[in-house]
Image (cartoon, rainbow, N blue to C red; front, side, top):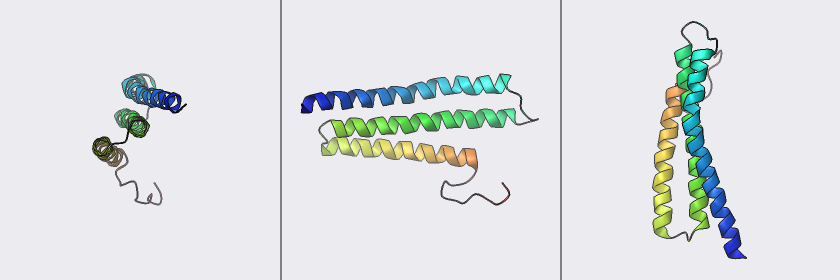
Length: 116
């Protein structure tokens, strides 16, 4: 019974990781489509493209972190596996924060300015 559950959890982790990769592969195409074919205000098409591209990367990273966490928990959580997961999560969290600051111009914990 335990092996069957572990089998399905491993498949779930793989599916989530594949979803993250697909988001990061197809997201840029969506961003390019909007860049070339959507109507934009003057000068906003590049900003929209960067924002769409950044959102695709952020969403893909979130899926990958979730898949890594599930995969680590479903296997024998040795200290080495947990440390590797910790490093991966730290790197991806740093990338996510950097992208979010780049896109929004503020830290995620900062309040939205009045009038923006």
